[in-house]
Length: 254
Ligand code: NDP
Image 1 (cartoon, rainbow, N blue to C red):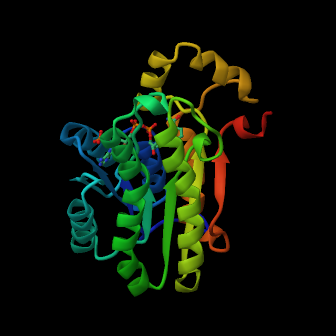
Image 2 (image 1 turned 135 degrees about the horizontal axis):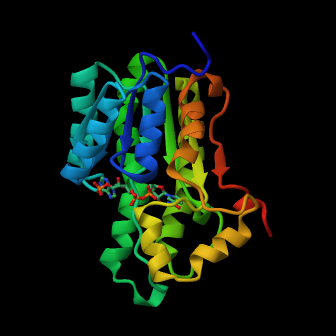
C-alpha cells in the first residue's frame, strides 16, 4: 500500500461542512478515507455530505457543537458505532470576533477560547481510547498565522491559536509512546466565509495580505488538502509535535 494511501482509515473533521474543513475532508476522502464531517448547521452539513457522496466518498455528517462536551462525546461514539473505529481526528472548527481587547465581553472571549482551543482537548481526549485500542492515531490541529503573530483586534483568537501550538506539542509528547502523532497546520490567509467577513470589517486586509505573501495571492481552501493528507497518512509517522505553516510564504516575510 502507498505511503500516502488512507484506504480503510476513518477520519473525523470538526467544522468539516465548509471552508478549509470541507476541503480537507474531501482531500482525505479522495485518498481513500471514510470521512465524518461535524458542524452545527444542518443545511451546511447536508450540502457538504451530498457533495462528498457525489464524489463516491464514504461519508457521514453529524450535527455537533464542539463547545459542548456531550455533543463531542456523542460524535466520537456515533462514529465508532457507524464505522467501528477512528484513525484520524482533524480539530478544525473555529470562530472569531474582532474587537480591541478593552471592548470584549467575557462571554465573547470565552466562546472563542472554547471553540478554538478547549474543543481540541475535548475531542482529542474522547478519541484517545479508540486510538489506543487501534494501536495508532493521528491528530491534526488547525492553528493560524495568529499562532505566531499578534492581533490587536483578535486577541482572543490569537491567544487560542497560540495555545493550539502548545497543546499540540504537549499532546504529541504525552502520546508519542502510544503511537499517536499530533501535529498542527498553520494556514495563511485563505478565502473562506470567515475571512470574507474579516475583509469586510478591515477593508485594507485584502491588499495587505497580497503584498506580504511571497506567492502574491490569498490561498484557497484546497491548498490545505495536501498537508492534511500528509499528516494523516503513514508517510508522516516520524513527525509529531510540529506546526507546519501552509501560507504561501506569509510567515517567512519580515
Ligand atoms: P469557516 O467559517 O468557513 O468555517 C468554520 C467552521 O467551523 C464551520 O464549518 C463551522 O460550522 C465550524 N464551527 C464553528 N463553531 C463551531 C461549533 N461550536 N461547533 C461545531 N462546528 C463549529 O472558516 P474557515 O474554513 O476559514 O476556518 C476553519 C479553521 O481554519 C478555523 O479553525 C480557522 O480559525 C482556521 N483558519 C482559517 C484561516 C483563513 O484564512 N480562512 C487562516 C488560519 C486559520 P457551523 O457553521 O456548522 O457551525
